[in-house]
Length: 78
Image (cartoon, rainbow, N blue to C red):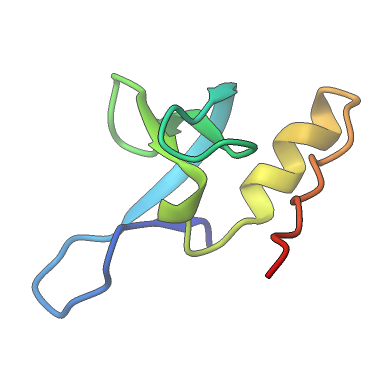
C-alpha cells in the first residue's frame, strides 16, 4: 500500500497513492523534490513534498517508469 501523510496521528486521514505524475524541485528543501500525486478515489492531483510520503516505493516506481535514476541524497557535512 502506498501512503502519504505529514505527521501520523490517530485522527488524521491516510490516503493511498494511485500514481505519481510529475516532479519538480522542492522550494523549501534544496536537492529534494515535490511530486504531483494522483490519489486513489480523487480526481484532482496535488503536489506533495518527498518528506510527506510514508511509503516511498511509489517514488522509486515513478523514477523507474521514467527511465531515470532516483536522485541521490546529498550528505550534509558537520
